[in-house]
Length: 131
Image 1 (cartoon, rainbow, N blue to C red):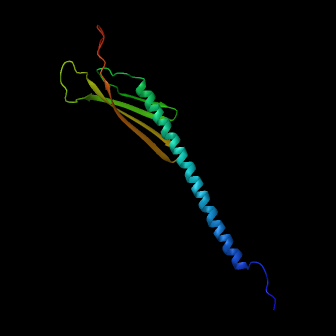
Image 2: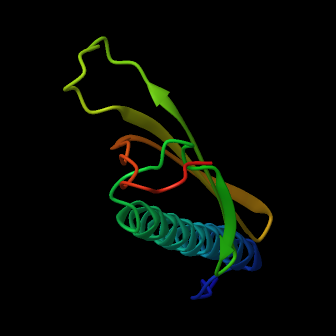
Image 3: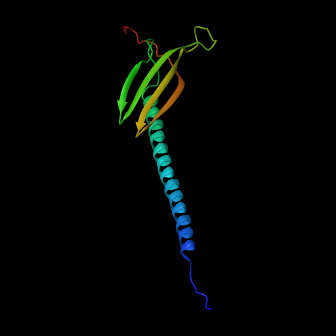
Protein backbone atom coordinates (compact mmCIF):
# COMPACT_ATOMS: atom_id res chain seq x y z
CA UNK A 1 0.00 0.00 0.00
CA UNK A 2 1.44 3.33 -1.05
CA UNK A 3 0.81 6.50 0.89
CA UNK A 4 -0.18 9.58 -0.96
CA UNK A 5 1.79 12.70 -0.40
CA UNK A 6 0.22 16.17 -0.11
CA UNK A 7 -2.69 17.74 1.71
CA UNK A 8 -6.11 16.28 2.16
CA UNK A 9 -9.20 18.25 1.25
CA UNK A 10 -10.01 18.78 4.93
CA UNK A 11 -6.54 20.22 5.62
CA UNK A 12 -6.92 22.63 2.69
CA UNK A 13 -10.33 23.79 3.92
CA UNK A 14 -8.97 24.43 7.42
CA UNK A 15 -5.99 26.35 6.00
CA UNK A 16 -8.28 28.53 3.83
CA UNK A 17 -10.59 29.18 6.79
CA UNK A 18 -7.68 30.30 8.97
CA UNK A 19 -6.36 32.50 6.17
CA UNK A 20 -9.80 34.07 5.60
CA UNK A 21 -10.24 34.86 9.30
CA UNK A 22 -6.72 36.34 9.48
CA UNK A 23 -7.29 38.55 6.43
CA UNK A 24 -10.63 39.70 7.79
CA UNK A 25 -9.00 40.75 11.06
CA UNK A 26 -6.19 42.54 9.23
CA UNK A 27 -8.66 44.50 7.10
CA UNK A 28 -10.63 45.44 10.20
CA UNK A 29 -7.53 46.63 12.06
CA UNK A 30 -6.30 48.63 9.07
CA UNK A 31 -9.73 50.22 8.59
CA UNK A 32 -9.98 51.13 12.26
CA UNK A 33 -6.54 52.73 12.19
CA UNK A 34 -7.50 54.86 9.20
CA UNK A 35 -10.62 55.98 11.05
CA UNK A 36 -8.56 56.99 14.09
CA UNK A 37 -6.16 58.97 11.91
CA UNK A 38 -9.11 60.86 10.38
CA UNK A 39 -10.53 61.58 13.86
CA UNK A 40 -7.15 62.85 15.08
CA UNK A 41 -6.83 65.09 12.02
CA UNK A 42 -10.28 66.61 12.59
CA UNK A 43 -9.49 67.18 16.27
CA UNK A 44 -6.16 68.85 15.44
CA UNK A 45 -7.89 71.17 12.95
CA UNK A 46 -10.44 72.09 15.63
CA UNK A 47 -7.60 72.90 18.05
CA UNK A 48 -5.98 75.15 15.41
CA UNK A 49 -9.30 76.94 14.87
CA UNK A 50 -9.69 77.47 18.63
CA UNK A 51 -6.16 78.85 18.89
CA UNK A 52 -6.81 81.15 15.95
CA UNK A 53 -10.09 82.46 17.39
CA UNK A 54 -8.52 83.11 20.79
CA UNK A 55 -5.46 84.76 19.24
CA UNK A 56 -7.75 87.15 17.33
CA UNK A 57 -8.73 88.79 20.62
CA UNK A 58 -6.38 90.01 23.27
CA UNK A 59 -9.24 91.39 25.36
CA UNK A 60 -13.03 91.48 25.61
CA UNK A 61 -15.31 94.52 25.62
CA UNK A 62 -17.51 95.28 28.61
CA UNK A 63 -20.46 93.59 26.87
CA UNK A 64 -18.46 90.37 26.55
CA UNK A 65 -17.91 88.09 23.56
CA UNK A 66 -20.98 86.32 22.21
CA UNK A 67 -20.45 85.17 18.65
CA UNK A 68 -21.19 82.19 16.40
CA UNK A 69 -19.52 81.22 13.17
CA UNK A 70 -18.52 78.54 10.73
CA UNK A 71 -15.15 77.83 9.17
CA UNK A 72 -14.13 74.95 6.88
CA UNK A 73 -16.88 72.63 8.09
CA UNK A 74 -16.44 73.52 11.77
CA UNK A 75 -19.22 75.34 13.63
CA UNK A 76 -18.00 77.42 16.55
CA UNK A 77 -19.60 79.38 19.35
CA UNK A 78 -17.94 81.81 21.75
CA UNK A 79 -19.71 82.89 24.94
CA UNK A 80 -18.35 84.95 27.80
CA UNK A 81 -19.41 86.09 31.20
CA UNK A 82 -17.70 88.19 33.85
CA UNK A 83 -15.36 86.18 36.03
CA UNK A 84 -15.33 86.87 39.73
CA UNK A 85 -12.05 85.62 41.10
CA UNK A 86 -12.43 87.06 44.57
CA UNK A 87 -10.21 90.12 43.99
CA UNK A 88 -12.38 93.20 44.26
CA UNK A 89 -10.10 96.23 44.22
CA UNK A 90 -10.29 99.16 41.79
CA UNK A 91 -6.81 98.34 40.46
CA UNK A 92 -7.70 94.73 39.65
CA UNK A 93 -8.19 93.91 35.98
CA UNK A 94 -11.68 92.61 35.31
CA UNK A 95 -11.69 89.22 33.63
CA UNK A 96 -14.17 87.37 31.44
CA UNK A 97 -14.50 83.59 31.33
CA UNK A 98 -14.55 82.56 27.68
CA UNK A 99 -16.28 79.30 26.70
CA UNK A 100 -15.41 78.31 23.16
CA UNK A 101 -17.20 75.32 21.64
CA UNK A 102 -16.26 73.85 18.25
CA UNK A 103 -18.41 71.14 16.62
CA UNK A 104 -17.91 69.10 13.47
CA UNK A 105 -19.25 65.95 11.89
CA UNK A 106 -16.83 63.60 10.20
CA UNK A 107 -18.93 61.01 8.43
CA UNK A 108 -21.31 59.42 10.90
CA UNK A 109 -19.38 60.46 14.03
CA UNK A 110 -19.70 64.02 15.31
CA UNK A 111 -16.86 65.63 17.19
CA UNK A 112 -16.67 68.42 19.73
CA UNK A 113 -13.93 70.49 21.34
CA UNK A 114 -14.59 72.73 24.33
CA UNK A 115 -12.11 75.33 25.57
CA UNK A 116 -12.47 77.50 28.67
CA UNK A 117 -10.06 80.36 29.33
CA UNK A 118 -9.90 83.88 30.74
CA UNK A 119 -9.40 87.17 28.89
CA UNK A 120 -9.10 90.66 30.37
CA UNK A 121 -11.86 93.20 29.91
CA UNK A 122 -10.87 96.07 27.65
CA UNK A 123 -11.51 99.47 29.16
CA UNK A 124 -13.39 101.86 26.87
CA UNK A 125 -11.33 104.57 25.23
CA UNK A 126 -12.11 108.16 26.20
CA UNK A 127 -15.26 109.23 24.35
CA UNK A 128 -16.08 105.67 23.23
CA UNK A 129 -19.74 104.72 23.55
CA UNK A 130 -20.20 101.34 25.21
CA UNK A 131 -23.30 99.46 24.12
